Length: 280
Image 1 (cartoon, rainbow, N blue to C red):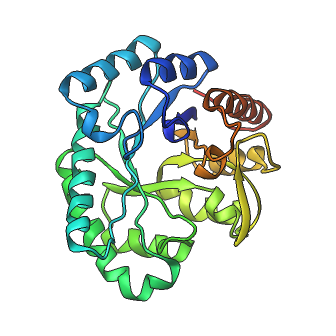
Image 2: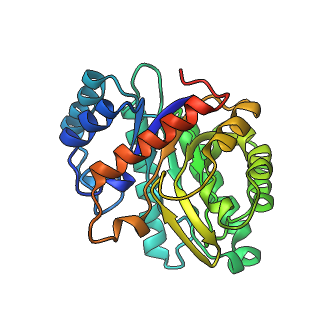
Image 3: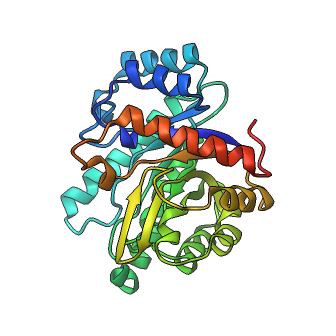
């Protein structure tokens, strides 16, 4: 396995600072975030900037396993939905453009909607995801759908249904165990069900159970990363374990994105050392 960091936790940090900082800490790869409000917002990444980012990654010896492009596929407004789908497809093209050493970044996104909407939106979600996956396939880019607490795709059963219905090598999961942990799903249970379909991951730390929960920086809570890594290893997963710092944490007055990355790195490195999982 490899250790990654998502710039989701670094909205205002420029790539010229983020990449050397994360590489220096010991991260193997970086997932860049391209939604509005970030220094790498999709609309700013012209051909010249894409070339510059590739150069930064190559000089500092880090990979780009994924791109965080989280955008709803289910917006009820027709015009906004069309804009969202254009953005997601443009992010697919970005992923293809940022392929380095044959590693094509996957596109991470959440589907949108609410849990109670599922009976009404699941067929629409099936169509929209199918369309995006077809587009991704034409560009060699995997769509990594992320089950997420509070959205329509919020449990194992629904997630497996979607994967079964589409059944494409270009649809896999961005598996963020925190959303299952705060829902009270045991680590072994969600890993056994979802790891075989996973191309990329997120990990946080967390406290409490839904609806009364809090996301934390890895190392601030008591989530058992050793158990998690051992379960992922036993399930045959051998790719990126990527840290994501949630918006909850970023809203703190004293939040420091560089310090957060350092704490998370120390926490995950210690977990790797204590687990059966091997960093490659």
